[in-house]
Image (cartoon, rainbow, N blue to C red):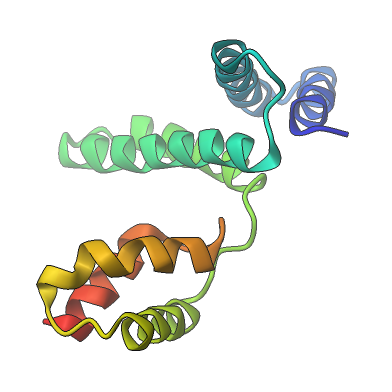
Length: 147
């Protein structure tokens, strides 16, 4: 079963059970996935589907920060709930220690010595991490180790 079919099934279940928040979030996700599929003119791969979900999660995180700065906790809470629903479709993310190990390995492999080498090292880190690495955290660790 593809990612779109799985999300459709879960959306219908949420609608039947009366979980409006989850149904709405999944409906938005489904629309984004179908939009991407139409733009590409072919079925989405698992990785492409995960990329769409990651983008939506990132948008929710940014919205939470903005709403909290604007002192709108009710809107921030709504975004947090949607983010939790979306994160269920992402693979388990690496811990900080695991990311540090990947970053250290990439630094050793490339021979990076300073902040100017970040552009050379980050693609390797992201490739090795697959879909389970937080790029922002990896970048922070990389800067710390090279700085």
